[in-house]
Length: 107
Length: 161
Image (cartoon, rainbow over all chains, first blue to last red):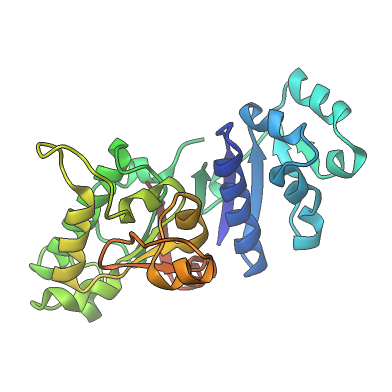
């Protein structure tokens, strides 16, 4: 199944659970794309947070870099976080066909 | 981007088995909507209405239990807390799920890690994690997240509530 998992809730637990779901499904062979919305940027800025740790390891799960909103704030974030984390982030494509995803999950 | 569940409120003829991923807190309107969806779907199949899976179509309501899959995750795990008190005039969604499960022999799996994070545990996990007491409501089961991944391996239509 091809899934887009959006993390939009600025709480450590909910963002962790959304990301854990994405990584688990990827482990089972599902194609999962993460989208990190601005409310979780504060957690990404904390290097010890579980979310930051999991995003750093996306390539270990054969997952593509997580998408960020296409705005100035995202560019600022990428410049502020460590390189190991920044390398796992990219801006959401300007033209995106959402129908490529069989489902969109929001946390 | 919107959740696909919004466009699938009414059970209609699908060849895919619905898999309801319930992440909403029981007080959220989506939690009630998930229950209504499941009730309508199972009733329609069991009573000869919408025939979602012809192979499972039967007058026996329990014959359609396998045609609907449920998974409680995140804040949805609160639904499985038997100690969640509320005043008498409020709708008891936990009891409603239990009644639905009993009628249709429906499984109600709950992600164990999200449940434990919210103070919801069964006897086995309480013993394993040195917790005092247990509060998992009857008919609910604590399972690993891998079970959801396995459900998704089947032909299903995933709906998040």
